[in-house]
Length: 221
Image 1 (spheres, rainbow, N blue to C red):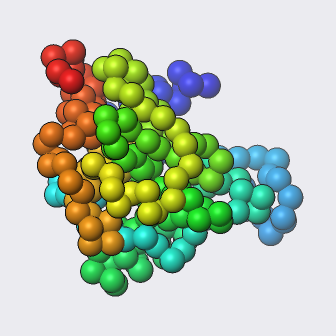
Image 2: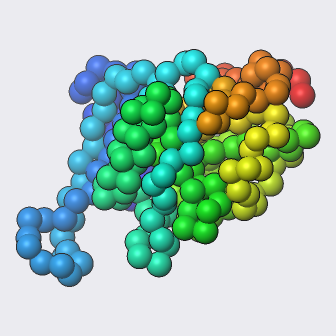
């Protein structure tokens, strides 16, 4: 199945004459009005040119009043279209408040993720990111963890509250559309370390090289 989907994706890119594009596979059920699991599903693969979702500039982030859904009420680790209602509300609220993006908490008040990206922060030479449970464990998040392992960057998955971020050194979002993008401030409070000197900047460059199929072994920590 994986090979078939990969081949189909390359065919879509070829037909669209694209070598650098955002690819979105979408699985959907056959038309019905039932609340039971469908017997048949269909697959659509689309691709289009799309710049970095969150841009190239460091982000001004706020703590959202919206929360990630309760894991007992929804499959929060599934990348389901219904999740985007929660994301749209959080991003819209952030922009209405004058910020670039929001940061959602889980139902216990721990930091979860951005509306469309996972979250990491740096403190005293260690990267921290929320564990699985209330987040979408994204592909880019996993790639960042692998990059950190290869570059001997220390990273820990743990629960933390918003107040833990206010004495952090740096932070960033990561996602397929967002790639790796640095955060300038949270609720107006700027991080102490310049982005170019941060662990996130190292990860960002390594990720860029990986996407472009270039070696990043030259990155020095």
